[in-house]
Amino acid sequence: MSGQDPVGRLALLCRHPIKSIGYEEIQRAVLTPDRAFPFDREWSVAHDAARFGARPDDWAPKMNFVRGWAAPALMAVTCRSDEAARRLRLSHPDCPDLDIAPDDAAEQARLIAWLRPLWPENRPDPAHVVHLPGRPMTDVPEPFVAVLSLSSLADLSARIGQDLSPHRFRGNLWVEGWAPWAEFGLVGQEITVGAARLRIEARITRCRATCANPATGRHDAEVLQALDAGFGHEDFGIYARVIRGGAVAVGDAVETT
Image (cartoon, rainbow, N blue to C red; front, side):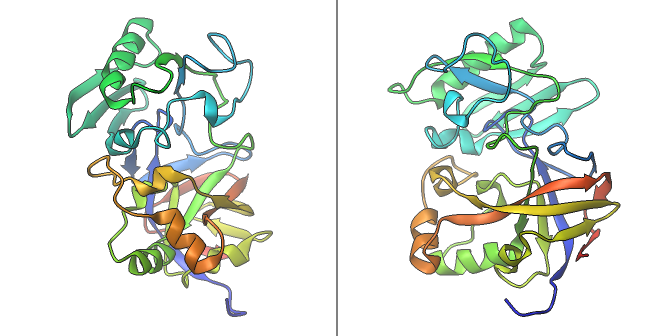
Protein backbone atom coordinates (compact mmCIF):
# COMPACT_ATOMS: atom_id res chain seq x y z
CA MET A 1 0.00 0.00 0.00
CA SER A 2 1.25 3.45 -0.90
CA GLY A 3 1.39 6.36 1.54
CA GLN A 4 -1.64 7.96 -0.08
CA ASP A 5 -4.88 7.57 1.86
CA PRO A 6 -7.45 5.55 -0.06
CA VAL A 7 -10.59 7.42 -1.07
CA GLY A 8 -13.63 5.56 -2.26
CA ARG A 9 -17.37 5.55 -2.63
CA LEU A 10 -20.03 3.39 -1.03
CA ALA A 11 -21.18 1.04 -3.79
CA LEU A 12 -23.32 -1.51 -1.94
CA LEU A 13 -25.12 -1.81 1.40
CA CYS A 14 -26.17 -5.24 2.64
CA ARG A 15 -27.83 -6.75 5.67
CA HIS A 16 -28.80 -10.25 6.76
CA PRO A 17 -31.83 -10.15 9.09
CA ILE A 18 -31.51 -13.85 10.01
CA LYS A 19 -27.95 -14.97 10.65
CA SER A 20 -26.67 -17.02 7.66
CA ILE A 21 -30.18 -17.23 6.18
CA GLY A 22 -30.72 -14.65 3.48
CA TYR A 23 -28.96 -11.53 2.22
CA GLU A 24 -30.58 -8.26 1.22
CA GLU A 25 -29.31 -5.18 -0.61
CA ILE A 26 -30.58 -1.81 0.60
CA GLN A 27 -30.01 1.80 -0.45
CA ARG A 28 -29.50 3.54 2.89
CA ALA A 29 -29.18 2.91 6.62
CA VAL A 30 -28.68 4.89 9.81
CA LEU A 31 -25.67 3.80 11.85
CA THR A 32 -25.60 4.15 15.65
CA PRO A 33 -22.46 4.48 17.79
CA ASP A 34 -21.28 1.18 19.29
CA ARG A 35 -24.01 -0.77 17.51
CA ALA A 36 -23.82 -3.34 14.73
CA PHE A 37 -25.36 -2.68 11.33
CA PRO A 38 -29.11 -2.08 11.76
CA PHE A 39 -31.45 -5.07 11.24
CA ASP A 40 -28.44 -7.32 10.62
CA ARG A 41 -28.40 -10.75 12.36
CA GLU A 42 -31.48 -9.60 14.26
CA TRP A 43 -32.52 -13.23 14.50
CA SER A 44 -30.59 -16.50 14.42
CA VAL A 45 -31.52 -20.18 14.39
CA ALA A 46 -29.96 -22.33 17.10
CA HIS A 47 -29.44 -26.04 16.46
CA ASP A 48 -30.02 -28.99 18.78
CA ALA A 49 -26.41 -29.01 19.99
CA ALA A 50 -26.36 -25.33 21.01
CA ARG A 51 -24.60 -24.79 24.33
CA PHE A 52 -27.47 -22.91 25.92
CA GLY A 53 -31.12 -23.55 26.59
CA ALA A 54 -34.00 -22.06 24.68
CA ARG A 55 -32.41 -18.63 24.80
CA PRO A 56 -28.87 -17.43 25.58
CA ASP A 57 -28.42 -14.69 28.14
CA ASP A 58 -26.04 -12.75 25.90
CA TRP A 59 -24.08 -13.02 22.67
CA ALA A 60 -23.18 -16.62 21.79
CA PRO A 61 -20.51 -17.99 19.41
CA LYS A 62 -21.49 -18.89 15.86
CA MET A 63 -20.91 -22.61 16.46
CA ASN A 64 -24.30 -22.66 18.22
CA PHE A 65 -26.25 -21.66 15.12
CA VAL A 66 -27.32 -22.84 11.71
CA ARG A 67 -24.85 -21.31 9.21
CA GLY A 68 -23.43 -21.56 5.72
CA TRP A 69 -20.16 -23.15 6.86
CA ALA A 70 -22.08 -26.37 7.52
CA ALA A 71 -24.76 -26.01 4.83
CA PRO A 72 -23.69 -24.33 1.57
CA ALA A 73 -27.32 -24.43 0.36
CA LEU A 74 -28.11 -21.67 2.86
CA MET A 75 -25.84 -19.30 0.98
CA ALA A 76 -28.44 -19.12 -1.83
CA VAL A 77 -31.21 -17.75 0.39
CA THR A 78 -32.20 -14.17 -0.41
CA CYS A 79 -34.32 -11.88 1.73
CA ARG A 80 -36.73 -9.00 1.38
CA SER A 81 -37.74 -7.34 4.60
CA ASP A 82 -40.26 -4.90 5.98
CA GLU A 83 -38.30 -3.56 8.93
CA ALA A 84 -41.20 -1.54 10.34
CA ALA A 85 -43.55 -4.54 10.30
CA ARG A 86 -40.73 -6.94 11.25
CA ARG A 87 -41.68 -9.28 8.43
CA LEU A 88 -39.40 -11.15 6.03
CA ARG A 89 -39.76 -12.91 2.71
CA LEU A 90 -37.15 -15.63 2.14
CA SER A 91 -36.43 -17.11 -1.28
CA HIS A 92 -34.29 -20.03 -2.45
CA PRO A 93 -33.94 -21.57 -5.93
CA ASP A 94 -34.98 -24.99 -4.61
CA CYS A 95 -37.78 -23.97 -2.21
CA PRO A 96 -41.08 -22.06 -2.29
CA ASP A 97 -40.90 -18.54 -0.92
CA LEU A 98 -41.57 -18.12 2.78
CA ASP A 99 -43.27 -15.06 4.28
CA ILE A 100 -42.86 -14.87 8.05
CA ALA A 101 -42.85 -12.67 11.12
CA PRO A 102 -39.86 -14.18 12.97
CA ASP A 103 -41.02 -12.88 16.36
CA ASP A 104 -44.17 -15.04 16.18
CA ALA A 105 -43.77 -18.55 17.67
CA ALA A 106 -46.01 -20.23 15.10
CA GLU A 107 -44.12 -18.66 12.23
CA GLN A 108 -40.80 -19.59 13.81
CA ALA A 109 -41.93 -23.21 13.48
CA ARG A 110 -42.61 -22.60 9.79
CA LEU A 111 -39.09 -21.24 9.38
CA ILE A 112 -37.57 -24.33 11.03
CA ALA A 113 -39.58 -26.59 8.72
CA TRP A 114 -38.54 -24.55 5.66
CA LEU A 115 -34.87 -24.88 6.61
CA ARG A 116 -34.80 -28.66 7.08
CA PRO A 117 -34.37 -29.59 3.37
CA LEU A 118 -31.46 -27.13 3.15
CA TRP A 119 -29.66 -28.48 6.22
CA PRO A 120 -27.41 -31.60 6.18
CA GLU A 121 -28.90 -34.72 7.76
CA ASN A 122 -25.64 -35.44 9.58
CA ARG A 123 -25.72 -32.12 11.48
CA PRO A 124 -27.70 -31.24 14.64
CA ASP A 125 -31.21 -30.21 13.55
CA PRO A 126 -32.36 -26.58 13.44
CA ALA A 127 -34.20 -26.20 16.74
CA HIS A 128 -35.45 -22.70 17.57
CA VAL A 129 -35.20 -19.02 16.72
CA VAL A 130 -33.11 -16.76 18.95
CA HIS A 131 -33.75 -13.04 19.32
CA LEU A 132 -32.13 -10.83 21.95
CA PRO A 133 -33.27 -7.20 21.58
CA GLY A 134 -30.27 -4.97 20.91
CA ARG A 135 -27.85 -7.94 20.79
CA PRO A 136 -27.53 -9.33 17.25
CA MET A 137 -25.70 -12.63 16.82
CA THR A 138 -22.83 -11.34 14.71
CA ASP A 139 -19.72 -13.50 14.29
CA VAL A 140 -17.80 -11.64 17.00
CA PRO A 141 -19.09 -10.25 20.32
CA GLU A 142 -18.04 -6.67 19.56
CA PRO A 143 -20.67 -4.50 17.83
CA PHE A 144 -18.76 -4.22 14.57
CA VAL A 145 -19.82 -3.31 11.03
CA ALA A 146 -18.15 -5.25 8.20
CA VAL A 147 -16.46 -3.08 5.52
CA LEU A 148 -15.22 -4.67 2.30
CA SER A 149 -13.59 -3.57 -0.95
CA LEU A 150 -14.85 -4.28 -4.46
CA SER A 151 -11.29 -3.79 -5.78
CA SER A 152 -10.03 -6.55 -3.51
CA LEU A 153 -12.94 -8.73 -4.62
CA ALA A 154 -12.00 -8.14 -8.27
CA ASP A 155 -8.37 -9.07 -7.55
CA LEU A 156 -9.41 -12.24 -5.72
CA SER A 157 -11.79 -13.12 -8.55
CA ALA A 158 -8.95 -12.78 -11.08
CA ARG A 159 -6.72 -15.04 -8.99
CA ILE A 160 -9.42 -17.71 -8.85
CA GLY A 161 -10.47 -17.28 -12.47
CA GLN A 162 -14.17 -16.54 -11.92
CA ASP A 163 -16.31 -13.63 -10.82
CA LEU A 164 -17.10 -13.85 -7.11
CA SER A 165 -20.32 -12.40 -5.76
CA PRO A 166 -20.01 -9.96 -2.86
CA HIS A 167 -22.67 -12.00 -1.10
CA ARG A 168 -20.22 -14.82 -0.41
CA PHE A 169 -18.73 -12.58 2.28
CA ARG A 170 -21.82 -11.30 4.13
CA GLY A 171 -20.48 -7.75 4.43
CA ASN A 172 -22.37 -4.57 5.24
CA LEU A 173 -20.54 -1.69 3.51
CA TRP A 174 -18.88 -2.35 0.14
CA VAL A 175 -16.49 0.34 -1.09
CA GLU A 176 -15.38 0.97 -4.66
CA GLY A 177 -12.32 3.03 -5.61
CA TRP A 178 -9.79 1.80 -3.08
CA ALA A 179 -6.63 0.12 -4.32
CA PRO A 180 -6.85 -3.68 -3.95
CA TRP A 181 -6.20 -4.73 -0.34
CA ALA A 182 -5.58 -1.13 0.79
CA GLU A 183 -8.24 -1.62 3.47
CA PHE A 184 -5.85 -3.73 5.57
CA GLY A 185 -3.65 -0.65 5.98
CA LEU A 186 -6.55 1.22 7.58
CA VAL A 187 -6.61 -0.81 10.81
CA GLY A 188 -6.33 1.68 13.66
CA GLN A 189 -7.51 4.60 11.50
CA GLU A 190 -10.89 6.28 11.10
CA ILE A 191 -13.07 6.72 8.04
CA THR A 192 -16.14 8.80 7.28
CA VAL A 193 -19.03 7.36 5.31
CA GLY A 194 -21.85 9.80 4.65
CA ALA A 195 -22.71 11.35 8.03
CA ALA A 196 -21.09 8.53 10.03
CA ARG A 197 -17.56 8.03 11.31
CA LEU A 198 -16.06 4.59 11.92
CA ARG A 199 -12.82 3.34 13.43
CA ILE A 200 -11.24 0.34 11.72
CA GLU A 201 -10.56 -2.30 14.37
CA ALA A 202 -9.42 -5.57 12.77
CA ARG A 203 -9.20 -7.75 9.69
CA ILE A 204 -11.87 -10.41 9.09
CA THR A 205 -10.74 -14.03 8.86
CA ARG A 206 -12.95 -16.10 6.62
CA CYS A 207 -14.53 -19.57 6.77
CA ARG A 208 -15.57 -22.12 4.17
CA ALA A 209 -19.00 -20.53 3.69
CA THR A 210 -17.28 -18.20 1.19
CA CYS A 211 -16.61 -21.18 -1.09
CA ALA A 212 -20.35 -21.50 -1.88
CA ASN A 213 -21.98 -19.67 -4.77
CA PRO A 214 -24.90 -17.48 -3.57
CA ALA A 215 -26.72 -18.13 -6.86
CA THR A 216 -26.70 -21.92 -6.50
CA GLY A 217 -25.86 -22.79 -2.91
CA ARG A 218 -23.08 -25.12 -4.07
CA HIS A 219 -19.33 -25.04 -3.51
CA ASP A 220 -17.61 -23.88 -6.69
CA ALA A 221 -14.55 -21.81 -5.68
CA GLU A 222 -11.65 -22.46 -3.30
CA VAL A 223 -11.67 -18.99 -1.80
CA LEU A 224 -9.67 -19.85 1.33
CA GLN A 225 -7.07 -21.72 -0.69
CA ALA A 226 -6.66 -18.75 -3.03
CA LEU A 227 -6.23 -16.32 -0.13
CA ASP A 228 -3.69 -18.56 1.56
CA ALA A 229 -1.75 -19.19 -1.65
CA GLY A 230 -1.69 -15.53 -2.64
CA PHE A 231 -1.17 -13.86 0.72
CA GLY A 232 -0.44 -16.44 3.40
CA HIS A 233 -3.69 -15.74 5.29
CA GLU A 234 -7.46 -16.21 4.98
CA ASP A 235 -8.49 -12.60 5.65
CA PHE A 236 -10.94 -10.62 3.55
CA GLY A 237 -12.53 -7.36 4.69
CA ILE A 238 -12.24 -5.33 7.88
CA TYR A 239 -14.29 -4.79 11.01
CA ALA A 240 -15.19 -1.22 11.99
CA ARG A 241 -16.77 0.32 15.08
CA VAL A 242 -19.25 3.17 14.64
CA ILE A 243 -17.98 6.10 16.70
CA ARG A 244 -20.31 8.77 15.26
CA GLY A 245 -23.73 7.79 14.06
CA GLY A 246 -25.54 9.04 11.01
CA ALA A 247 -27.12 8.15 7.71
CA VAL A 248 -25.15 6.33 5.01
CA ALA A 249 -26.33 5.70 1.47
CA VAL A 250 -25.13 4.12 -1.72
CA GLY A 251 -23.01 6.72 -3.53
CA ASP A 252 -21.64 8.38 -0.38
CA ALA A 253 -17.94 9.26 -0.30
CA VAL A 254 -15.71 7.10 1.92
CA GLU A 255 -12.68 8.98 3.21
CA THR A 256 -9.97 8.50 5.81
CA THR A 257 -9.75 11.16 8.50
